[in-house]
Image 1: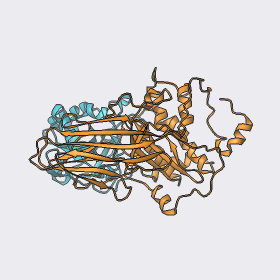
Image 2: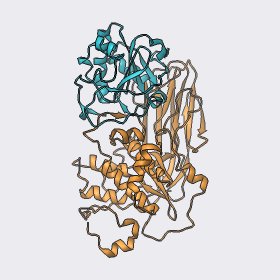
Image 3: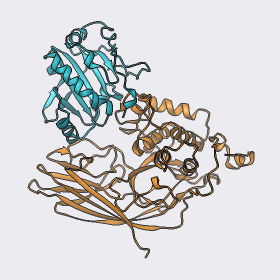
Image 4: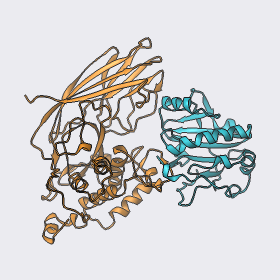
Length: 173
Length: 368
């Protein structure tokens, strides 16, 4: 299991993850199809936990969607809605469409297993699905080059920490 | 507030650390719930599902709390074009009307009428304790255990230990937690994100704001982590406050959005004691002219009163956590304070007025 991450007081940055064990999940997407993290093996993966009621999450999803488009498949984005009714997420996506799968962690089981304590939280996984970086806040995905993200996921800790993050703390839900 | 030595001695050691309240309650603020006047109420919940997709079900909470000191159940009746039966949660005794509609039903509807009698609650914690009022070991264990949304270990236990350090009595510990929650459960501008819905994530993120289901859950969790029985009581406001608090009562007969949960702590010698730190914050936030300081007389009075008393203008549904809805394959619900529904196997969104409509009304019945 990963060690729990406590939200640092400093501005949000991608923090290296020192975990050794791989993470896994299989969750339904909003259309009801089961999606396994394992199916993304072979490419860098961005796993993004969010909630539709969480204001910074709502602002961040479109930027993630643009990142997914820029990545041209080099980075898989998987978003996970935490503890929300299916219909609420489906309806939200009608007005805020995204270019990546949105999965439903209906009972928080995956969020808890990944030690997610605040939303949004994003993990960058390498091609073997090892978590390399985590950010427990919204993040300046606009400033991230998809190619850099894909290669940095394989780099040692610190590869992405120079990127200046968005810092919109006051908009927390 | 002036606290002289004699008052402190009279109140006992438990109050010696009470916050120095900065202002006397104004003469026109008399927030003093006191038992003695029972009133009967009738509540009607009408629920419609306008876009059913396949088999449809609904679960409507029924008044399940019956305590001779403050609330009596007077029964429920219903009408529906589905198949309805009362279901009872096996752990907490929470009752709900479970309604199932066949896949071909285009306009599922149910109307439930429940009646209760209730009155104000107040306990005088300055009175000598009645040592015969205790809770069995099993009940203590049940009401100090963690739940999915209210873990009592980790950061919750650490926080509780810090708050109660140096307190030696149950009342002292609970009072310290109450004051801490009231002082800290505002929305912190420095918070960096939203919690995932449990109180551990609230404490970890520092985002202690929220509504009753957050603030009073935090209070209950911190008290339970101190080894003292506590529980949330989920319900709905059904009448205006007779003490002039607009924010603490229903503003009309339509109470569709007036759900409110309170909290109880079990103090040896006093029994289950009424508390409501979330309503102290609600008074501060909403009472005209709004955004009152904690030393505003209205807030001071609410803070003083809501440790030991609450007004009988509210209906209690249940004290249940982590309920499995009978007949549902979906996730448990952390609590049952809102009607729940499912259609085509998917949980409906109680905030989605297009697909899942309900209207709740409440009125006082004439005294018989």
